[in-house]
Image (cartoon, rainbow, N blue to C red):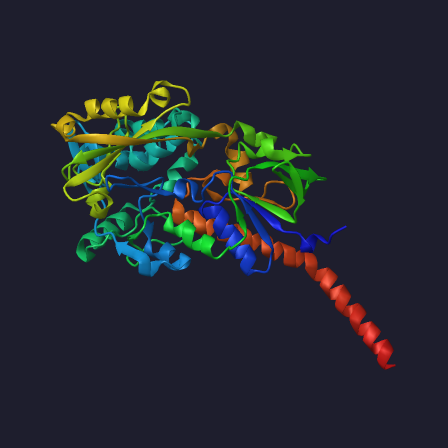
Length: 462
């Protein structure tokens, strides 16, 4: 029987989390095998360049300079000079956050909410948003957007949904002011594992966000197997024993999974400890990239629409990164919350493009004449939905899966709202906690072996 210390660690998925985990384990002396179900690496961290000169990033539109430095691609990135958000309220656009604070009814309502907390269940997102922002801003803006984004009523969502929003309005306003003064897009709300500051700002890799995964993969030669979905994780006595890939069982020391946590129970054979995670829900999303003539067609890079439109957010990334489209052209990304199989999910790509253009006419007058075509991305697992009914189990997942040797990492595996930089830091943290635990387990055996060696040496000398 092989010594478990000689066995490889299997990593499920070659996106940013899986590759970061694999590289860090390898750096610490562990043998690693990465199994990727798709024929290519990167997943939602991928980048697509089309024949018309447009560039589409599957997930993140940009990264921070801090993440670029951690991966080692700082020299291959362009500076992003500006980034801003606006919200359509009462037929007019209002800047976030300054413009919202200048509306008297929002400000007065927010002050009342601090003095007299709202009625309702404090464990829900509805209560938390009304307390933090006041009933007016919550009911007119925050909660409609939250429900469009999550597909669930705010009074069924856990209060922790609000944790992804910057807690300090004053600090947020300070960083926005610094961004204008320094002519660079200072990061606000794009990482929670590390502090926000004026020295952390947005950059864009020369060849797209996929550069992150490509650079890491270069350091893992012979480790990554694409088109190799893991069919099962074999567990005995609540401890990982093996994985099954291409109908072959491979003995492993541990498994690091980036699979969605509600799918992971289907992969585990020999334990039912993960069954509670089957009920966890992800929000499907239909993302329609419209190719258009012109530039600066939206009032800011991101525009939010609480009501009245099939999309809840529009993004014109070329306002921040003009190189993503040919000169004189732009892209507007329409984010539509969906359910698998509904009318938006099943609509074909051309029909979706026309559908979005029709609803954009009063947002971008004359948009039909500007329209050049579209590219559509559908994902059934765009965002974790923090339902209050399983909040306790979600929090417990931060500590352990309950199976020895099974780590669940990444946005989908941790069931978290983490953006790309947070995925990096939380994955590093989980991997190092596992490594430290192995050292603690191995230390008594090491000390016992050392004592035996000394006894034998003393006996020999005697």
